[in-house]
Amino acid sequence: MAEIKSLKSKKKRTESSRRWLIRQLNDPFVQKAAKDGYRSRAAYKLIEVQEKFKLLKSGSLVVDLGCTPGGWLQVSRKYVGKAGKVIGLDINFMEPIPGAEFIQADFLTEEGLLKLQDVLDGRKCDIVLSDMAAPSCGMPKVDHLRIMNLLEIAYEFALNHLNEGGCFVAKVLKGGTEQELLKDMKKSFKIVEHFKPKSSRQDSAEQYVVAMDFRG
Image (cartoon, rainbow, N blue to C red; front, side, top):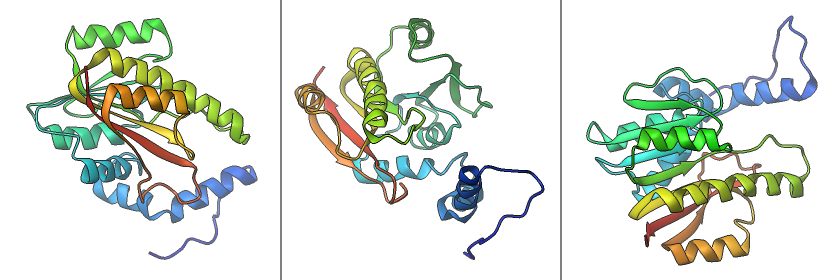
């Protein structure tokens, strides 16, 4: 694909937003997502996780925390099929995705969790996904603490709502999870691995923790 070296527009942009937009336009996964009908390039990250670990199965009940713009919901629907159920939650509005249920609520509040629990109606999940990330402030230590906070809350939800044998996938920054949390994950799941998809930008510190076979 030809590289787009310049960006012509009458609209004034900051230098950082200009660099971001040019990177987006030049990104092959952004272009591929548009071609394949996915709402974001992040869809390919979950596809790679699925290809390696085979977590999503026909009939599974999946909860996606922080789901907008919906790429992971689209991928989940593809693999769980009509027999499965996919529920997404996000503080931001999202256009509906056929076959997926969306809850607009703040996952970090008790109200948001109660809304999600109401939709689950006592059912346990087979997979809990979290691609949530706090806005970067450019300070690695602060960014790490913010994403660790999201990870810990998502992990606590998974512990309380997963079926025995279930799986948990969440975004972390390079260096993985804090040792205490990682030790706890290894007690709660039979297999815990870190994975960086090829579709993650190589200059990004993000990777994913994949916890499999929940002990219950």
